[in-house]
Length: 152
Image 1 (cartoon, helix red, strand yellow):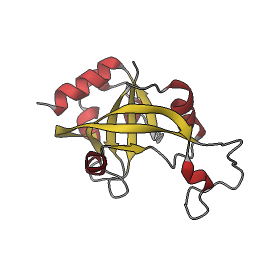
Image 2 (spheres, one colour):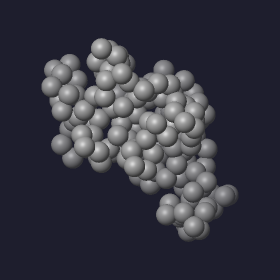
Image 3 (cartoon, helix red, strand yellow):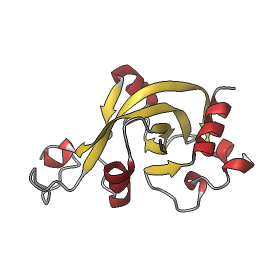
């Protein structure tokens, strides 16, 4: 099992949106490294920290789980979508996405500053300068610490 932090702007798609829908395709990712995480490393059952980015304050709002492995991202074929990619075809898709299933909302929202203030989380990618990747691996230890803080 692997552990991930996945970012979404809450005014676009929040933990509440996922709770309401129960599951969703994590579509619209147009970064090759993030896409490769979904295509090559994520597996059903992997655990997810759901992170609200571009929020005041940004932070971890809840938990989810990977419920389906990578599949072609349908938004790349939709000419009306802002994620349309004219260079992509159904025979040779460039972009993939996983399905994410709601697990729970944390009792306590964990802000980016909260994460920075926990010594044992000092190596998390999300607090590194210039780290803007929307999908990031986290260690089992980091995941467990976040869960413990979120449920206090």
